[in-house]
Image (cartoon, rainbow, N blue to C red):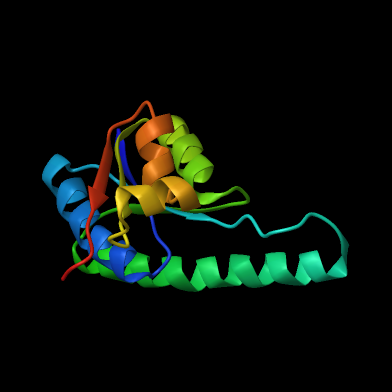
Length: 138
């Protein structure tokens, strides 16, 4: 089993990282750090450049998360997945036998999340794995 975390260095994800590390340590399970790197569009040179920039942003973000987890002696696996975040997390959870998926929240209202399709909102409706949604700090 494992704990899967969606991480992008947003304020909500930063707090979710701390919670995911606590949960991983408590269960003595590895932490799978996931970055959904689907770039908008599908064709052309512009898409390729944008896609690589998104993947590089993911690498930088996940490097930070690995350092924080290492300091807490939590084992990690890193995945940059070419899918939208919710689907990337669902797929990673399935592959790694996740106990939980942990995500941060931007403090959006339920209506805003439903209208804009936030990752936590999608996960709560699509995931067969329990989702731990961590609110941002006030």
